Length: 152
Image (cartoon, rainbow, N blue to C red):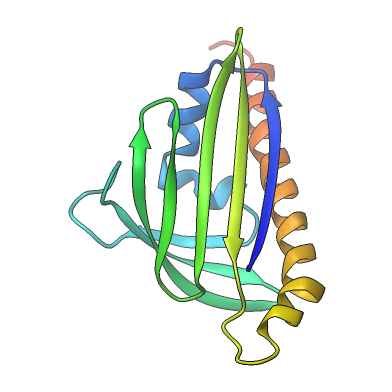
């Protein structure tokens, strides 16, 4: 099992960052390798919501489903896989004055008997570091772009 945790400070209030990041319809705009996100439950926001999506890791596409737990508005949540690649994610949002520190962690493993942990260390961990770093930078860029847009 590997764990990758990164954080970033975004020049926007916590409620704006949280609302954008919690909108599953926006995930493919900023989360590296994620596409075709859709809800699979009647609940589409908060505890109990489930999302199916395609994820690209190690040049392989897979369909996964994640269920949301421990959801607290403007604070964060935990996502736990229910289908596909076994994983757990943690999303934490902290206000720092008028900015937001977003900490994102991913835990998972390659479900391959005998060589799975070796694959985790050699291949999966470096790939997840790259994905999480790129995703956090993409998220920050969304807010930099929004602040540069002229008022209408």
